[in-house]
Image (tube, rainbow, N blue to C red; front, side, top):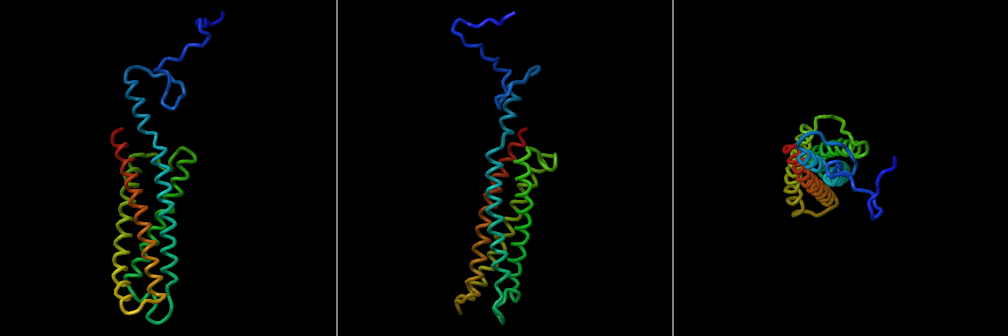
Length: 197
């Protein structure tokens, strides 16, 4: 038995309730079909996930640069970062930021590549992302503000390679802070969507 074709020659379009948000057809049983498609739309976080990955990759790069520049800022005598607790603090926080962003970038790459997260609890991970980005960003701004005061004081007496290297490491920490702060905003957006579901 052949299917009937309308007079204009085009096949009939599928019913609206049989088309999902992503374009694939599926059946929706019972009521609440409109609510389910709205929830599916909310969960499509491709753009925020890519933005968060990009921002964390930028934070990873700048925290690595801050770590390398500060760790190599040893020129002998009083021009050694190990003699200043503020620089040690800045170096330690740069290491923490680098380790955190490394773990998050690897996790985000895995999630975007495979479509699955390493841990299934989405709401818990959204909270961890939001809180982690904020805590590490706060630590970075704390460390660079402490180191900036010492560098400014030393630059009043002498402007040399040691103070220039310290200023460069502080600048890299600041850029890492900005990237993680923006990532915290994106994580907050994702967390708000998870709270609505």
